[in-house]
Amino acid sequence: MSRLTLVCVEESLAAGIEALPGHVVVRLGSDDLGGLAGILSSADSPDVLVLGEELPLESSLHFSASVSEHHPEVEVVLVRDVTGDLPLRALRAGVRDIVPPAADAEMLGEAFSRPNRLPRRTTGESALPQTAPGPVHDGRVVVVTSPKGGVGKTTVATNLALAFGKDNPGDVVLVDLDLQFGDVDTMLDIRPHHTIADVFDGSGAFDALVMRTYLTVHDSGISVLCGAPSPDVADRISGPDVGKLIDELSRQFRHVVVDTSAGITEWTLAALEQASNLVLLSSMDVACIRGMRKEIDVLAELGLMPQARTVVLNMADRQSGMKVKDVENVIGVPVDNVLPRAREVHLAGNHGAPMVLSRRKSSFSKGIRHLAEAIQAQEHVRHHRRVELA
Image 1 (cartoon, rainbow, N blue to C red):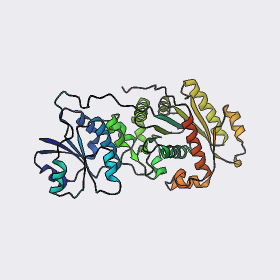
Image 2: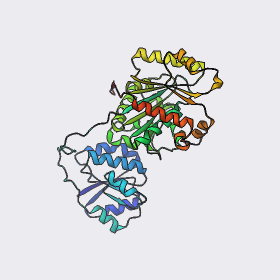
Image 3: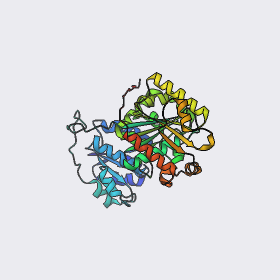
Image 4: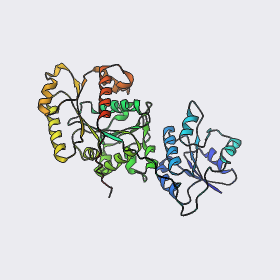
């Protein structure tokens, strides 16, 4: 007799599946998704996992791919209307079959009557096949910081992630680490089902199997871990939490871009402990430039200055009364990239249409692409100073 776990499936469809001979149906809601990692690892894990249409499609496909890799004995069935390239994407994600939401008894019988592709394991056997472990990503972690707010840090981080994504489709994640007032979701015009708060509240917070289900996939193909919905979430997240999160993401993605809050917080320091590349951002005003000099000194003193460091001047123009050489004299290091001030950059952010997508030929977009290329050309070294959770 099969045990069938359902996630976000309508009652009528659940009843139809339960009516099939030899099936026991266990219903789970979307709030229970974090606990699925434990269920799948248990000795009496399900034969078939049904991912209903209430679960976002991208999350379902990511989750299916993880199940296929870590629990290949569990069959995954997707409940969706078949449109566009869904069959091909589902096949690549390891989905066994796609069932329409209005499936009748005959369709359900056909979908669930086939035997599992792999034999069931008995109690005590390993959940994974005895094969050599596959390669693990050691992703590039790019942390974007600034001593002050209002200098376009989120704009640069977001556009930089999108520039990485052009050459690395599906292998880039953007993390909104401004835990109190993050607005990456606004910048990208996305409405996430999950945020960084769910990562630390969920029972399977750092399980690779469920990590991707907390991410939102942008139309461009990059994944986004959106900021918390309320500032008080920051009180529940520690520096070690953040370090463990970024380390796990670096194992799953080739590029991890981290947008931080202004100044030097414990979460920014934790991100820097995992960083391979640092982008130091400043505008052309005296207060911010002096702040950058202090930030450089502090990070060097703490031993948290990555070997690959890039100094970027944003919103540069001749109205400031300063030249790039003046900035270099104050901060004591060369300026690597200059991004021009442009009114359309602000408008693009307000409309959720980042410049590298909406105005690709603009000087700003060209500057971001140059920055992305320069970072990818830098040596990729991470010290992996991991901080384990208590």
